[in-house]
Image 1 (cartoon, rainbow, N blue to C red):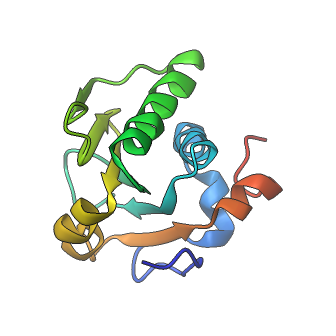
Image 2: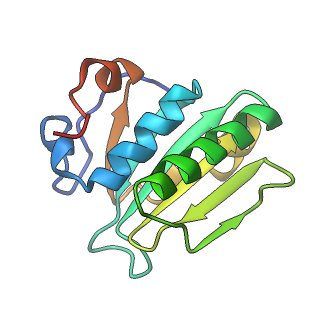
Length: 143
């Protein structure tokens, strides 16, 4: 999986306007990047899924890192007043799902991410791969 920024295949989210996406998604991306998550991706599912608007996907190298990524996302968003509706998969940490209603954060280990391949399953949605440098330079930071 590439960490290079790609223009979406379809839809209306581009790298240049990702900063217009809900600030909570940007906070989740920043939190994941702080824990050295790799292959950060946002899928815009508006118009193709009725249960959420966005998937935010991240990968960790091992169980402890996947848990650390999810812990940081939950903590950072809770600190800013947003609580998750539910968290699933924490104990096994192959795939941790954090449901925020209008977006769902997915933290995978590398093997599970390749196996489930959400980007392929939801390929009709717009996709933006986010490089950690974008977060450090402030291009996605809260304004």
